[in-house]
Image: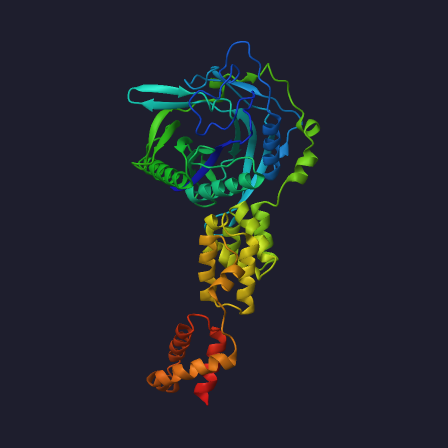
Length: 473
């Protein structure tokens, strides 16, 4: 029996608007005392009327455009009925059959290097519930988060492995941060993922699906690593059941990261269980007319995939460097400012290997560019440049200030180096014999001695050249 893994994702994104989805309450609940950012509307008091947050709708449409979606000509909110202790109204204002965007795609590169288009079923907008806090036998409710704008992105079941699901999530997070619609921090709950996974039987002869699998939903995943681990476990569990001839139960399971297992929580709900109907208090929308879709298209930034392609084709960077630089918008922007002045490959090496993300906050791109220009010109050596870089990071000073105050200057003049090299040759007769006997690595030792005598200030290329000339004479 040949088996194929099929995965679809439901991703919730907390938008970072100033106010909540349907009221004027502050949307930033982090650090606020429980139940201090609430009002009659987000508490679901009788007689209150919601007013939709235009910024949240525009950001949802912009995300839909970035994901190559079709924008709906007609859209509306719906009531989704279910009871949770932290959902004060007893229903959630969401979207059902008329989402703001649908039929899109996101291209990823899977672990084998294959480019794959993962279809996007829909992008819709809803309000978040509150938060339950468990203390011993008691459970407390904090409604600060109730009413937060929550964008839901649903993929088609096009992912074929846990690794692809992780890559999809990482690419989506980069896009959301480029658009600046969400901080998309999974640990803080800004980006949450539920996954549906099934194992399907396929025909060995034609690789066609012969029997559809039973989907299982996994909840409670708040990191990329967790998404991959939970799906890998569930993939293995389902395959083992099928190989034993047992049936898969359609259910919702939670992920226990400590034990590394999924745990059955409840039977899977169906759409009819939610009793959707149009939200009577909010009029329908015609997004393509009311919210200037063409204007939103023009506001789209260059997205990660576009940047990667440009870095590889125009700047001649290796694909791995391009991938690392474009994960974070701020890092990509920093790199580009440095690469305007120095060789892009040199800039990429320093931003990736030396600067790291924390350095972005301390060293200005123009100061790093100044340092690298001096390195390119041969004014300082590679070793000295890293010493200066460390001082720049620790003190916030510019490279010119550090060079002047510490008297750092590369010794590159042949006349000045020649006398130093004469001394090194005189002090190392055995190494000279080894070199002349054919041990070429001896030259590296001699260059090292020159660098030591000059405290790293000698130009190694010039020192190498003079040594060869003197040893061959």
